[in-house]
Length: 180
Image (cartoon, rainbow, N blue to C red; front, side, top):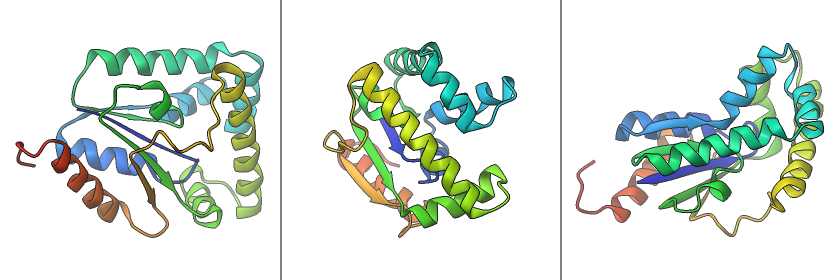
């Protein structure tokens, strides 16, 4: 089974992906973690590295191509990233996580150890705008088009256990012969 988990920064995609990976024994590929590692390797913040990626499409296309390649070669995999639902076209389950901006900003401040919420919000909105432009430019993808997703869940309403429970039920419905 191939599952994609997508959402805007701070929506909880990595947390849900880790939950699913641990509870189902699936492999996990995270575009966000790869992107963060590349930013760190270049001694740049995420927004600054995003601008570099905007100037040089090789960064994005490398991450996207690698995710597609790995997902095609493996079964029982979670592919986490903003474009995963668009890139892994044969996924049995595509999930989009939504959370209100205030909720996402609080998570980002904690996760990325940003000094304050105003700074985190500015950086996050700049990053989202930059990414949306790149996705449209590279692939003609409108990131706000959620029509490809099987599940759209509010991670501001449910924690990771609640989200995991909903997805566990979905997996059971897709593979009713397997015991979870």
